[in-house]
Amino acid sequence: MASLNVGNLGEYLREQRRNAQLTLRQLADAAGVSNPYLSQIERGLRKPSAEILQQLARALRISAETLYVQAGILEERDRDEAEVRSVILADPSITEQQKQVLLQIYESFRKENGLATDDDSKPSS
Image (cartoon, rainbow, N blue to C red; front, top):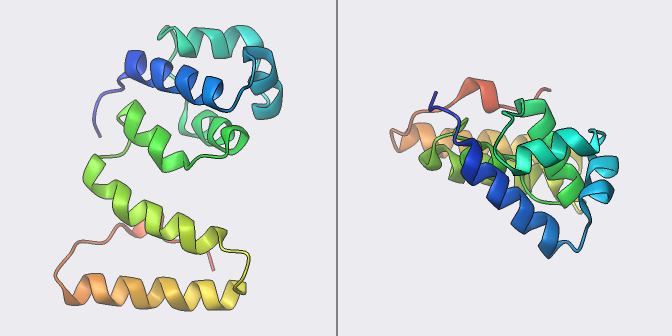
């Protein structure tokens, strides 16, 4: 696991919050974290957990994997696979069963092409 790059994460979060036209307090409320804690994250003083990053991503309507990469939790090369999974899982036009089948097909193609898989990122059945 890469070391956390909290300064860049904070800058990135601030930029995403501003793009979403949210105040610090609005984002903190939406993500279920305290205003001072979010401020410390944005200033690079705190290292948020993956769970907090997920809550922030949900509130900002961005992929949690993007924040994981910014925080150094997820390697950049793993992001593409994670984003494919996220897009499939988020698609409201297909059923849960269809999503699982698509993920299985995607995984089989990756294996066929000799690409490593990350069993931890597989969705629960």
